[in-house]
Picture (cartoon, one colour):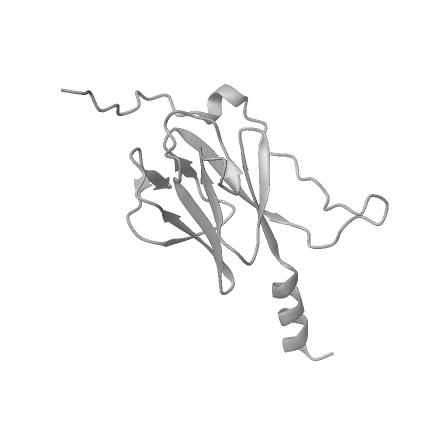
Amino acid sequence: MAGGDEKTQEREGTRYRVRAQGRAALVGEDELVIGRSPYCSLVLDQDTLSRLHATLRIAGDDVELVDLGSSNGTFLNGARISAAVKVKPSDEIRLGAVRIWIEVASARPSLETGRLPTVNPPTTPVEDTLVKQTPRIEKEP
């Protein structure tokens, strides 16, 4: 097999997983929508998230993050984003006050279970996944 064919095979086999609040979802061919709505691909019950907060999608060889007009913002490495940005597993991503992680997931299911192998999330206690900040709440007049 030629060197180029091996690289193509590697890229096609790379899968990404997003983790937050003890939940996980694979980023596939379609957009992965994150928010509070039960219609989202990854539903997270947290007050600083919008119903439809952000989306992750595969863009070529990269994963792209887009804020969907959320109230409390989407942040990449501490900076609020306003347009689509490329993300990688080492990036710090925050949706409102919720920290999420992007991981490379194996594309090969286990021969024993038929499932993708699990990857342990960072050893951060659950309470540390929420940013210690006061959420912006609009007051009614």
